[in-house]
Image (cartoon, rainbow, N blue to C red; front, side, top):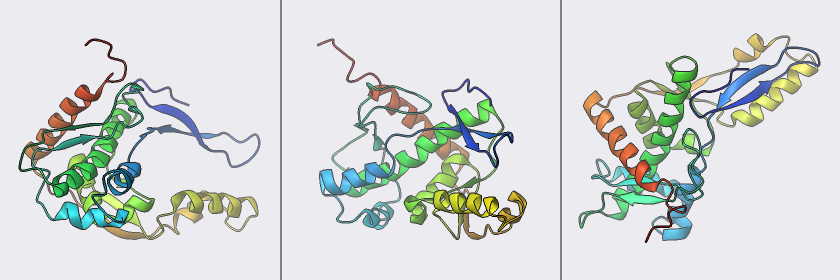
Length: 225
């Protein structure tokens, strides 16, 4: 195991047999990602279904300066601030629900960018990101993720990776597969998203995001009036 010096968690990835060496991983826990989309649906009523966010966010070219920090229950990795609170910065009279929707998708990708920057500092730079889960169905989000990371994002044919991993380990245990390498051959690519955003634009979005994060920090812990 490697202890993180950048605000990540060290966790056990898997152990194939009793007494066998364990494989460890670095984990970056983000508290609000998909739940931020649920908040747009249930809290604000901006969208009717979670899947509606993609079309709404795509109806504008960008967030027009709106930045959402979804620190509804504090900030997780790599910030670890339980007193941070949700913040929307950059609102103007031009701001619409589409800009807030776009800022919400940006916030998911930007939180991942923070985690992967920490991982690069602790281990090695990421050259490609493989995604899974319900949010992986959102093409706009995955393109934003590729743009903000500056590396390709790969969506597999099977996006329920947690369940697939458990099934794969069970298959190894009963000798359905002979080795992890045999399991790896079953992985299949659905779509690869290549970064297309300019470096200046990427750096500008990251700069504004970090400014907004700082404004959200310690909000619940502030006692000055």
